[in-house]
Length: 378
Image (cartoon, rainbow, N blue to C red; front, side):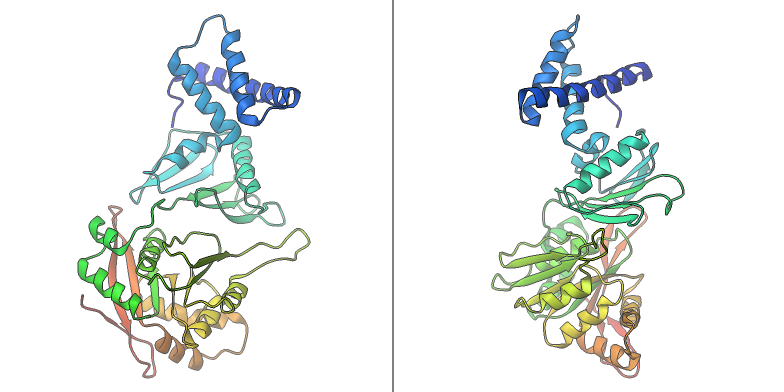
């Protein structure tokens, strides 16, 4: 994303200087006149244009206003990318290495930022979330106001630059019928899965990164009966649901004193006290898989996602995660429990052309000494 009206290096340098001067003038003006920030910005911009010997053309004036609003009240040079609905993800490897993904395919942008701009934008994003990022806590996950997920890693964990990922999610909640229309699911797959939801089957949605697991999970939730009470737990808010009786919970970091952390394991236990008729876990990665299985084994229907290369791999992975709990949990307990609790695995796939689809629906077979699945013909 270039500065459209300021193509040459000289013009871009002049614009950066203008924005810096506007920032100083804005702070002084807001303090002196006790104005709210947007009003102060408009007044400062009006003064800027009036002070020029030659009046700026309309295009330049509009561009400067847009850049100033992004700089002081938005997320700087990243704001147009966040606003662009065709962009699925934004990531920064270095200030001069900025990438985006559109329709599942990535590309590098002709855009650069300074290190100070990158850190300043991230700090502005985190200011809205209450989460922190420092040497003692060099990773952070947070939700932005539009629902996008922010992930940041800082040096010395990274080699030299801040690593920033912004995963955007559809602003609209898609139903299974929508996925059929997009070509991401067949009509028979849609009908089978909607029937499974109505029959309170327990579903595990699997796939690789960016395969569309959360989108499929949210689409499945559209098939819930309006009388259900949904409780969802996630690391950061990503799930979308069109149901009135829904409480969404997310984890929390510990504070500077090292206390106050809220884990997924804790959230699953708390969710069981909230009278759910359906439990959803955004993703299982570690020992929280044990708490999920215990909840499902109690008769509470639920759904969750997991990273895996196939439906069978998803079940095998789910059988190993509870062993990370550090408790004396034998495989002889875990595997039969999975076979009894998980009814179907919905495996999502992202192909080389960036197309996402439900590649397979597999039924988890009764336990006969080993975990196994069978493809559902639909």
